Length: 291
Image (cartoon, rainbow, N blue to C red; front, top):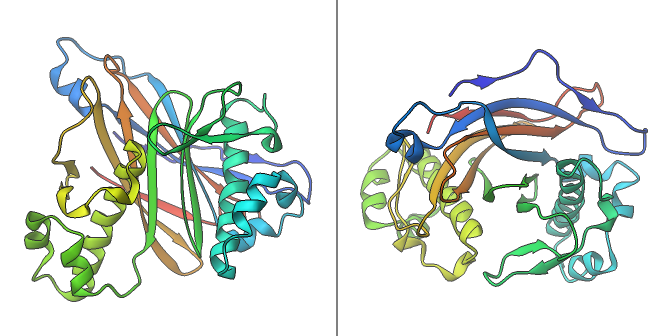
């Protein structure tokens, strides 16, 4: 489905001490399995929505109110992180998550009021008694991404593509068929294709809740188009979106995993929301890839 940039980019503005965000591209994602099996034409009006929020940790921390959103439990977890850059990105991830959850529920719950538990699949989730929202977080030193949806389970991951990756790492974390497909490519392309596979696998494991307990060599994807070659939860279907993000002269690859429940034959709108720069424009530029 085509990407819609939108004629009006709505910016959230409250005060100079609070972070501001701007809406980026929107993409209508049709559930491919439902489309292939549909006996009659599908309603193309979006029935689900996923917001993908992104921010640079340093830029988000410049908003003076950001730190006031965190709870004592947040700070207990954060204070166990020794590396300053990792601690900063962890803070930014928790701040961004709270803002995203409140936006997803029309601000009926304040950002500082959200509480979290670990569910049966070892995934963090919203605590009972609060509005049910699915979410996933990915953060590295230079970038934080948060995906939220009130209707669909999601998983998200991001990696900088401008990094060195050893041949042994590629061999240890790719399926044999994947290794055959990326092996022999020029070195920069091999690394880039491996990182695309890596983010897809990370997004998938966050979605299903297994995390690094699952052997990445047993998970298989093909690229262009992206296809997951594995079993899914009975009665549901998986779909994946991937896109590049540029920020502060760095390029990142992000992957979004989506679980459609049984009977969901609708269209999902994926919306990018990024931290606004000082001139009010989006500080990150995302480009979706066709899956």
